[in-house]
Length: 259
Image 1 (cartoon, helix red, strand yellow):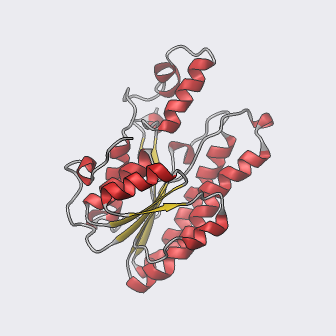
Image 2 (cartoon, rainbow, N blue to C red):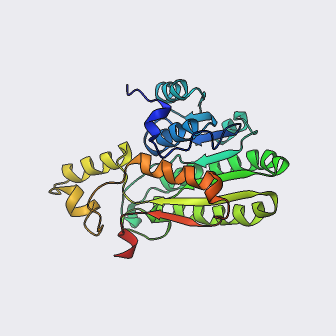
């Protein structure tokens, strides 16, 4: 099991910028969520780490001095057991399923929306009263370039991320009078277990060098994005420099959407 410490967030994490704040990060057991938990803790926040993988989320929470919550966000009633006194909400949990539109399993499509759209809605509803009372709040939704553009064979993911973009904008409009911002961060291909599984599936299907020929084919910057780079963007949106950014989509894609 990997060891994580707040220092792993890198020198860009502003010590103390979130002192006294409480954050909740979903999908915190690995990948982007793990990096966000580390970065927010390094900036002074007390972190509630949420994931369905008990071992991973417990280890992350212990490393950052936070609290672990073993919750599967597909179980919507379980969200009612999560804390509501949250200043920074990072909706990160998600998963991929690849299949042609005509063969996409409806039950899988619905599950993806439950985890990536309905769960963020319920978490916003749970946290907004505290944010409004405090006159300050930060909601960051980890979307994707697929929240802005589409690719074949990803109907569930593309539709869910587009829906999350819309939900984020509504939260931005309604939250503005109360000092609450809501934004999306839109990564391209990130070095995470999810992407590594896609590469394995492509290779197993006979694709030669899938990283170069598929994932990075149209990306001018020929490398994967690191999870810590996404976390740095999330931290900026939560810090003093991001106070006027709301209702936006911050693209981190190495030029993928420009090409």
